Length: 139
Image (cartoon, rainbow, N blue to C red; front, side, top):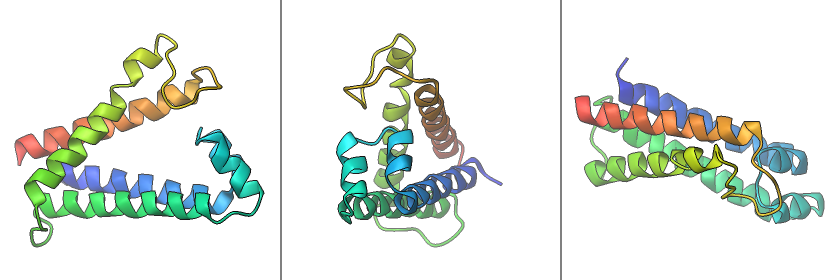
């Protein structure tokens, strides 16, 4: 298995987790530190949080396809090179928030302190970005 194939599997796992969050509702939005409005809207029966979260799941699924195509699993996709580089950069940039979070700086919530699972999520995202980067560099 190539590093980009592993990256694709991880992106698909992120997509599945977003789908699970959308199906689980307000408590999952709160646990995963989505904006408070998402949890409130989900509790009120709004479809918007679920649709938005499912759109993110779709995006991560497409990212998985780009990683697989870049790994040579199937035919190249449109704009494959700049897209896989952008995906890698996004993962790395989001993962880089780990370092200020270690010192208590919060970026994704205004009302909460940095919790251990915030650090875990940042480590996971940084690891996915590094796997993509290594996969892009070694293909």
